[in-house]
Length: 130
Image (tube, rainbow, N blue to C red):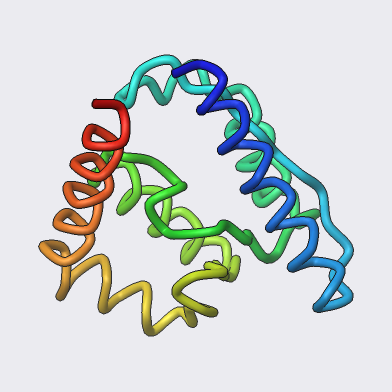
């Protein structure tokens, strides 16, 4: 399982690097290793990212998928609210660029959809492990 997690993480980082190169973006990579799905306090790189957003160094966050922010639905919503408050864009390689109007739609009107996506991802991972 550990080897799979490392290769999966490396693959995602490679996808993100290629995406940045393809779009000619300058970027800084923030990578956390989360020991528990609900453990958001120990995410040192996430704290650095938030500090850089607050100080205006970062104005766009790019992830492979919105579910990569956190497996915890409430945390994802709070993070999206944080991005909106700081006029920071969120671009998801799989879902595409999310404008600030999309934040409202996801945060307030479609919470079930995101939660269901996270459940599907967890179920898929469980099947891969078996």
